Image (cartoon, rainbow, N blue to C red; front, side, top):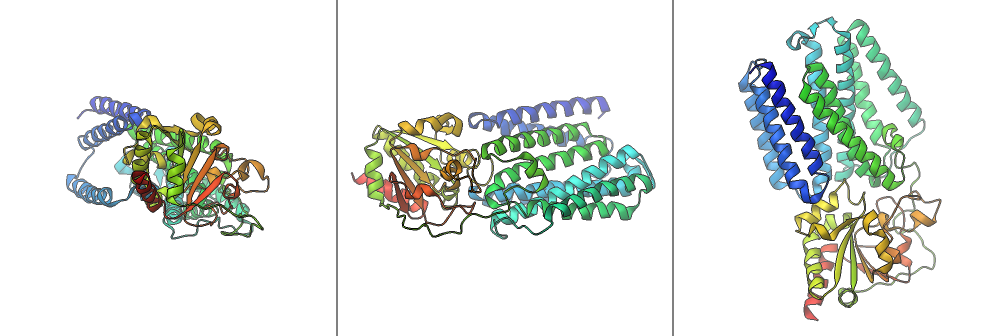
Length: 466
């Protein structure tokens, strides 16, 4: 295949990736977006395999078979609730791939037309240095994010004295090492860059609390894109440059939007200070003489069946219990009774962007019943019942009323303005941010203590018996 045809096909693949991003921006077009992405990747792979630079198809085919087999097994076995940690794990592999490609280009530059060992173009050294540094940071940062989401590491911020000065020192050292690599092209300096970047990835993500993981996953996605973009310059591959830039910029924009949704600083995400250094009250903290009003499935069924408007607010508790199918069944019964049922999605509900949308789509909840926070928040005041299923921090009024709270300033869903709040929760434990929810103690709140799936199933039975 000649260079002009390859460039044209790479351009077509790039357009497919752009259309994929456009399609994935809304649930109704997400299937088409996925198809565009698959088509673009197929074109990119086949075009690359047809270029004259390929010298061994056997290794490539073996690698594709191994990777394809692993991917197929994961796709068949992975639970929708585990998607956040799966995404984090995949980001780590992208970063690791960038490190390996940069190492291959540095130690065998003649294979990539970059010169010979010890005499590599300075521009190429800068490109591969940035690629390997961002890739290494992405790798270890994503591993930490995976461990936190999987529960292997505590979700609380892990902080220590002089943390930020240490991060700053490592950042400066990384820049110095890149300059030294450009000057003497030493293999030792190259591996020092890798080691410092790996350490920096750990130190940037460890201090971030579990409640802020959705933004972290999004930012790590951005990092993986920029790592791929940097390596694209090294390999002189236009498609890799374009694709990496698309992923990097879209991930950064999404992270910025989510930071606004949580009233956080985008710079704290980048610098590893996100999530704060003070924890909220411990789970089950003493709330003085405050008491809660608890109810049963029959009470919830009666209230919702006699309501005219119900807004359902899903959260991570729904994901953990895999309650989305029972929840949809409950909503279907209510709609048959003439109740107006809608779903309210907070931008950081769950553990990754769009987590709740994916779970509701899996349960075949109609897209036109699902609304983002900005679209539906004003309607809570005119709603008879807000049905909160495992969504804690994103409904906590302390974000508006308590300046000392770690979540103060974060926009929340105004469920407290509804006539009645039905709140499904296993216990009175605080949310992932470690903050007790004062909504539990409001006069218009009824707590439903149970597993989210079981409670929804009990409500369904109660509705069917009426």
